[in-house]
Image (cartoon, rainbow, N blue to C red; front, side, top):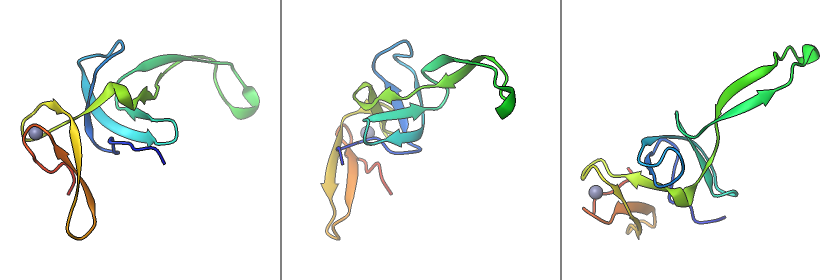
Length: 108
Ligand SMILES: [Zn+2]
């Protein structure tokens, strides 16, 4: 599996695209695609065809689309900045993410 530094429920900062400079909560991560869906950001207008058999109404449906994780940075709660993340391995073998700015643990 690819190395993904973003996890579900992280607060992330968007580095590029039309929502650059905004931040939001990660709803879902697609590690295989290196993409993540961020709540309320990167909306696309999804056009749907009416399909009476499936009871789907036609029209335009705003939908969050996945953002490539290289465009996302984790927000650190302690220094309140988007920050580079380092991975530390604890004595018990667990991997935890650490803020490179302030060395705060980003994982419980
Ligand atoms: Zn920090």
